[in-house]
Figure 1 (spheres, rainbow, N blue to C red):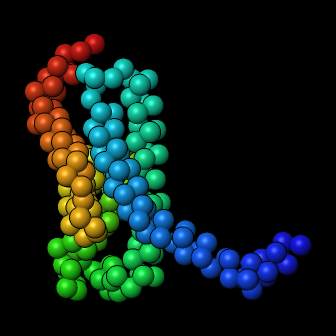
Figure 2 (tube, rainbow, N blue to C red):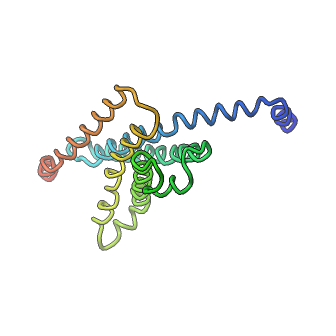
Length: 197
């Protein structure tokens, strides 16, 4: 019965407009979802590392949310990149080589951010191996590529797609400023963390 209905939908042409609508929706919003999820990942990750801000049990929950938003960011990138390829906005080489093509600034930043995000996610998955090794600090050094991925991802979102509304630009500027301020405050808060029981 389902096969007959699917065949009828294809034959009558009602299925293709629905697919096009889904494709447009993914094209329009998957990049935004990825960028918002990456923004939340960076901010929650920063919050989860501060011992003076959260109690240990709250830090564990924040780390779980951090991992979940990172997964959403990576998962949203799959339809985002696929939509760009299917709609011929860029070729396969442009999609995966950050220094190719005519849209170097916008698309190149997105490609670079993608590789940095994948590196940060892979280091998060392999955290146990780093912690048990001789150089546990190496994990933190590699995982910090998430901080390096976020500004180019924001710049890509603001320059490669449609022209953003002024409130979108202001919101991302505020987020970048808040994270920069929190990172700058960490050396001041570290001695307090050591003194805290």
